[in-house]
Image (cartoon, rainbow, N blue to C red; front, side, top):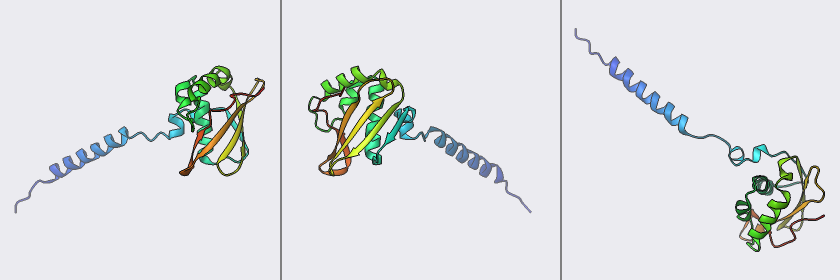
Amino acid sequence: MTHRRTGGRGLLAAAVAAASLLLAACTTDHTPPHVKDGRADLDLSVTGQPSSETLALVEKALVRIQRHDAEGLAKLSSDGKDAEESAEKWVARWGDAAQGPMVADFAVDPKTYVRVEIRFRGVKGYLPLTLEADTDDDWTYGIVTAEKSDKE
């Protein structure tokens, strides 16, 4: 009676397959988006009833203000009017204050607008933001930049 030895090849193939799966799993980044873009590190309290979309937009704006990233902040504009100028003013005025605790108070206006007042601990005044829904997509919002940048 003759025995064939195939266990070695099968074991080798299984080892190669397992190693491939292990390497593939290691290269896939499972970090949640809010951790990658810095939103998880914000010291932010929220009042009112934001939707997940409007809250995410405000968080993204605050991260850009916190990082003094006027260019990135301007890209969040819904209307493009004065976006770069407003973003530069907001970053200059609120960038240092955004390093500490913040409160975002959401007030929903008619269907397409959301008004948010951002208050920074230890700083007089607040940053008013108006979020506007995209007319083609009720779930996409942008920041209206064609308005006064702060109240005192």
